Image (cartoon, rainbow, N blue to C red; front, side):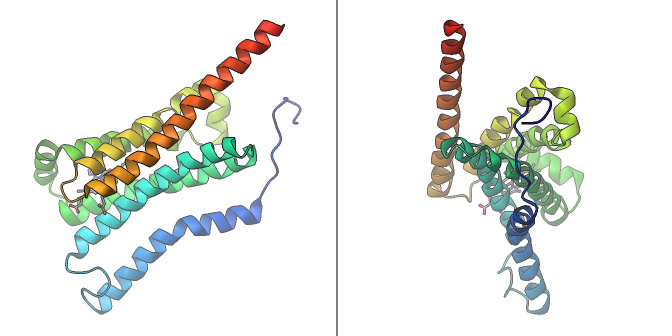
Amino acid sequence: MTKSGRLKLPKFRLTKVVFWCLLAIPLALLINDIRIELSAPTLGLGADPEDAIVDHLGIWSIRLLWFTLFISSLSRLVKKPVLIQFRRMAGLWTFAMVCLHVTSYILLLARVDLMVILDDFVERPYIIAGLTGLCSLIPLAITSTRGWRRRLRENWKRLHRFVYVAALAAWIHLFWLERATFEESAIYGVILIFLFTERVVNTIRTRKQRQAVKGAT
Ligand code: HEM
């Protein structure tokens, strides 16, 4: 315990470096594919390289988002609060991946044409869902530091519930994509339902425990 009464968690410097490297693998794979594509067209990224880049970054955005949510569930299920230390890194990687995904869309698919982006915004509802996801993640990324956590106290937890809005928006984004298969969105949907259910069960359990403690005092 620290002087302030908070639980002191061990520092895993080397594990964190390894974890960071693992999270960087999807991006490294894409960079390698781009390198192959530049020397041998269609070999690295297939017939539609622009689409392939946007899709790769999109699919890894959603995978990392799910993984970030999973870290919290896992830490509760196996009763290992130390795992929470890795959540922030996974969350920041998710945000970076989403930013790269959106940037690749603007540069490669919309070709920095505001009219194309506005047209897509009106004609393709999945873009609105994607933007909702992105906008929900921005305040979380900004306030992810220890300083912000200290300053916001209980509000920090409340604010970070936006991650559920982001996850739901990301899933709707995937579901609405014409090219995503039903199986693909179903798999991500089932995992999300599990992650949400675990949280609801945990909240109910914690409330009951608090009430029991209050009743006993
Ligand atoms: C939390 C935010 C977001 C997540 C998690 C996300 C995730 C995804 C996923 C999983 C796909 C499908 C990839 C595949 O089937 O292989 C995708 C595709 C796509 N996303 Fe996003 N996305 C997000 C935000 C956005 C935003 C803000 C935009 C644009 C402003 C955008 C534009 C696109 C486009 C254009 C495609 C389809 C590309 C194609 O036609 O193949 N996404 N995204």
